[in-house]
Image (cartoon, rainbow, N blue to C red; front, side):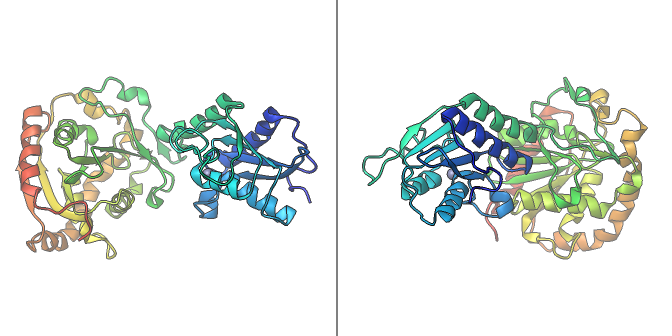
Length: 403
Ligand SMILES: [Zn+2]
């Protein structure tokens, strides 16, 4: 029985084999999987099986294109030995797949793009050609390499920048508004797959080493956005700290629901909890000013299931007006449509009142240091002084390890 999607197909050469594998890779990309495809043909060139990458959908770390093709072929032939077969795959096999190729006694592997990070057919390891093993498989590399590589690059590029479609009930400030931002060297970083975001794209600066002594979650005020922390981010990062500075939904480079009513303090807190979850923060310093300070204070008590171990300290910044660049402050909010969150802010502030008592009890139990400090965030000198003082103040927090 031929594969359902490839009845009676014959591979007429290496280029043709990789072309067929590329179709599988594109099908994987369409499902949101890393685009890698594989085709297995017998000694006569007849297609026995095809496979495409599917670890996400299959919830299976082994669901690589090659493994899936090998399994399907073995089922079809009723034999795990695939003697005489050729495997065509768009990307150099990894160690796992190369191992499976050896176990299946595949005669030859033809691949497209090299994988300089994980390739086990000569790039990082040479599993297929290692004479110490009891079997070797011939390898033909680089067939349609640029086409196969381009598909992978194309797949990864949009995820780094702005692939997420814009929801109909939201606005997105054009990138041009953020050109030439002063004192802002960080490329945009986006998240759109947190459940609470429901498809909205959130901008989050995450800089510094993951194993830094402390992680700082900086929450901006309204009307403001993460640019408010530009000097503090630089200062903390220079001190070797990890800094996470999100733009709350409706602010900065994050998507902006058109209706002010879309905003609630509980929802913002939920997005932040999911963000902390995603980044696996432990005993982080919550820092904020104004509305962001209120969020920082109340976040650990804003939901019953909230993991209090994530938060090891609280830094409340009394920031005053940042007169450095009104244009940069206003960049994300070009018209009334983009300002719904600013209109909602006074209500969010009122909503935060009810959680304050519980928050005070949480922070005043003595287990977690709290620091309130005035700082003109537009002054690099003051931002560096704050970073220095706060880093020393919070240094006793055993960060990075669950308590
Ligand atoms: Zn693999």
